[in-house]
Image 1 (cartoon, rainbow, N blue to C red):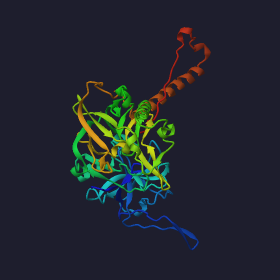
Image 2 (cartoon, helix red, strand yellow):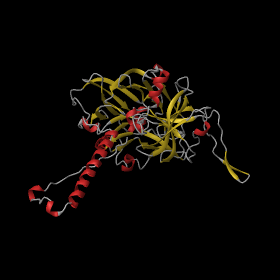
Image 3 (tube, rainbow, N blue to C red):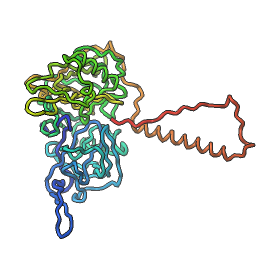
Image 4 (cartoon, helix red, strand yellow):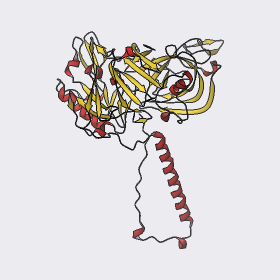
Length: 462
């Protein structure tokens, strides 16, 4: 399972899979005319589908019809083992969405666990801003908990099925090797997804573990952030508003707006660049330097503190600017342009590929913890660009930095339906009162007037 991934932080990392009986994918979707009819060419045997590895969602889905932005799709009619469940499912992400139909089929992972396993698969029939021009993957592998599965948590996830059928430990680990390399979407960077364990060759030093606060996303607890060794001095609850998660399907490090503003101010204050363009920080502009220059020396180190399994201790993971000042475009022979690998978020702190490319990350579901260790591939010009240090005391932070009220999406749906039902009942009562003859109506006084204030219930996507 070592080096079984390809991709980069700009478009995600993907795993090759074979789906169906016989294993097939439509690899050539060009059209030709024959006898006045338009035919589609297809190749059935042994083509592989590239599946995006996403620890921030829970459905396994693959393109089920031709799409202008994918080179292959899974044709259910060509598989003798496919069984449709006839259930429509829609999944929305922070960017993009898709709608498909649930079914089951057998899956083989050439560079993974030996054997063929029957898995729930959603075939994507419609999508919006999900498959993008130039992407090298044809589907998505959601590795989070069944709480996030659509249309309900009763849909057994890919990894839960694998643990049961292959009898592997309930743990997987992930290494993404793109540090300092161009975010091009070419899919040339490597990586590893180890299913069922930990591979010692993929990390250096010790593994530091932080507890999973809730089993939906991989939600962790962030205690504080430092820029250039200086504490941002924010209330630790700001870092966890309204959740902090580890998500390989998010390309950047995303920070709640207040935290993002503080980080940008601290980087601008600490860096050696004066009057830096605001468009660079917002992601609307690139910054370019001569190719002979290394702009990383102008920026500070960024550190994220997490609570240790021993709650009175913490550890910090640090990324050097080689990870968050990302090369993306070369202009001519002389200029190299870079993007800012950090963005703002309205509902979460998301440890995405910007940070994960510096570490070997262990998702230990059996012991409800996420582990971090320095990745040997997180080097630029032979020097490490990530660090882990600890332990540190937690006496300077609150005993709990996570809100005790976490609104999972299913809870929001229940609350929405409850409010709708209540409104329906109230409306029915009002209609009855309107139909009652005036002599039977109660005459209200000023003391009977009640002011009602309603609140909106919002969907919260990652």
